Length: 60
Image 1 (spheres, one colour):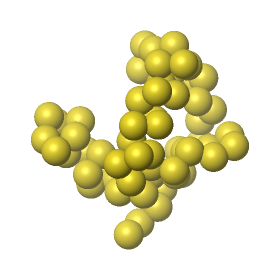
Image 2 (cartoon, helix red, strand yellow; image 1 turned 45 degrees about the vertical axis):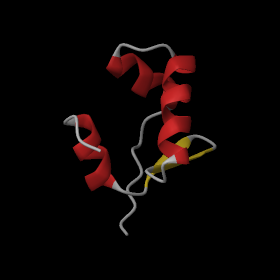
Image 3 (tube, one colour; image 1 turned 30 degrees about the vertical axis):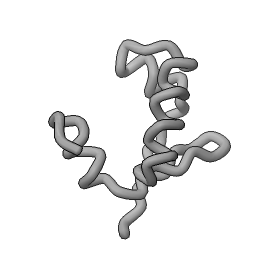
């Protein structure tokens, strides 16, 4: 399993996606429950970038 860490605050990620931070937090919590990411203080670890990509493309 690879791990990647975007170097952007959650507020910046939310703005880049056209979301409010609370909305992004709800989405990230769902991803965390599915084992796709780990949310920590001032960072989000991508635990399974391939599955995230598939989800973004409408897959499981």
